[in-house]
Image (cartoon, rainbow, N blue to C red; front, top):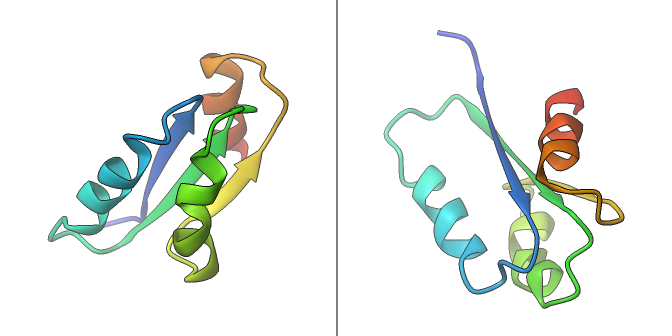
Length: 78
């Protein structure tokens, strides 16, 4: 099976983003990548993501706030 790309757009989701990532990491299927696109969140989203970024568990992209569609498309491009 081909690799699965899990794209997670995030804006002000610091309270939920770790649970979303941990849910993906808990899956039995292992051939995946996680791409998180921070859509300019002014909250602590990046701070919550820091351990995942540093461990290489996610690909992290930050962009100015442009809305969820642009964030998803940026993740697809990556």
